[in-house]
Amino acid sequence: MEESTEGAKEQQSASSGSYFLIIVRLSVLFILLCGIVYPLTATAIAQVLMPSQANGSLLKNTAGAVVGSELIGQNFTDPGRFHGRVSSIEYQAGASGSNNYGPSNPDMLKRTQDFIAQWQQDNPDVPIAKLPVDLATNSGSGLDPHITPQSAIVQIPRVSQVTGIPAAQLEELVDRYTEGRDLGLFGEKRVNVLKLNIALSELHGAL
Image (cartoon, rainbow, N blue to C red; front, side, top):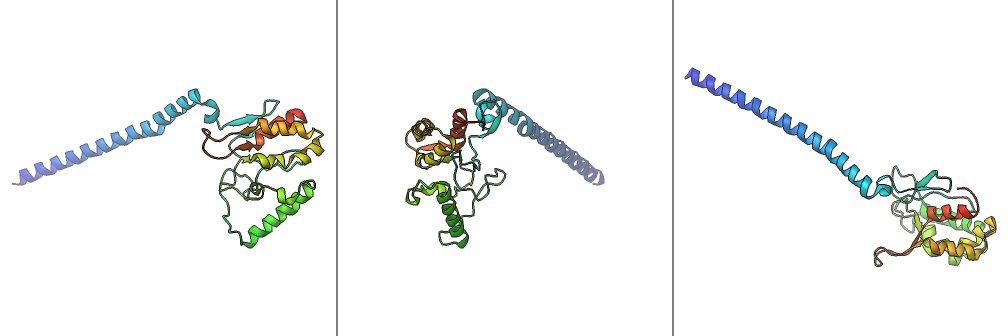
């Protein structure tokens, strides 16, 4: 009886050791597959099929220097450049989001009033009634790189006055950089502000 009990214990110990080795081997295997092989394979495929997107959809200026990503907006303040949407996070891509204030929130009202006052100061030739709502509002992420074509058009008088570029030429530029709906059905027409300003810099000055 004692020998039988000892044999059972040895068999159980051997089984436990066997299970432990199996767990270790599977863990190592999945670490190699999921932690090394899969990421390297996915990266290699992306670099071959879509290198621009895989590297962050980076945009370069006329000198070939990287000036940003077409996926993330920037806080343009130069009156001689087209401006993007309001961003409560100052376009800091490390933490996207917005305050999600309601229309009656005091901070929201003050921010909107301050923006309108600044808009009137910077764009005296454009009536406040023609200010598109997307210029005065935050996007859900705070990183939206696009504005509506109308939001670009209403800035033309200011940009034209500062740069000396004829308004008609700027209108052609906005039209050229107006992107259509996705698949012709989804979303709205839009203008990538960074792309537009890079093109503007070719006409006026370095970005």
